[in-house]
Image (tube, rainbow, N blue to C red; front, side, top):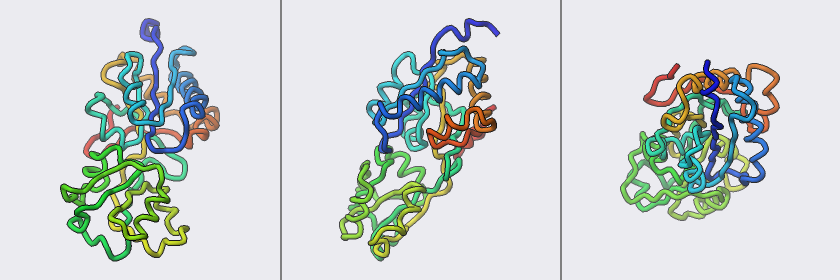
Length: 257
């Protein structure tokens, strides 16, 4: 294989809006991941670098830069921005404690929400609230929302749940980890799961447009799929709460070789 394929440095952009972690805190871990990925893929040292941004706006700006070749993003981000950024998934994350897929749960006050029409005038609060396409057409696809429903992002989940319990016109869409913690709340008896999504991918690694030559992309995908099967990368993956990767199996799509 020609060394010209490896002449440039590719950037992997991590973006996880709404989840804890500042860019500076995460940077050493994402760069360690990039280094391990390049090694596993057989790329020269230093040919893959990583940057992290915890915001939607910042992540979009980084992904638009000319050196950005790859994205590691939650599935909600992919649904919202995948077409705009020309993202093609090459791997699906296997997350510690969750797996490769998760269900999202719409939580409301007991006895209030009985079906989609009863959400008229409500606001849906969620860590994925920055991605209304995901909320409406993936997580709540089976529940056609009234047109006046608002969808807003929040990082203050406990506050949102207290507002629900107090009877405000809000509901919360929770990821699998958040929903599992509901029974521990002192006011849990005032909350009810109204509907749950089908299993959806947790996060994906995707190539941006045609910013990587096909041969280089194939070696990278093969490297990602090998990670998690050896002890060499176990610590690197664990720092990002990952177990490894599988070929992408997205709703309505088939896995690509």
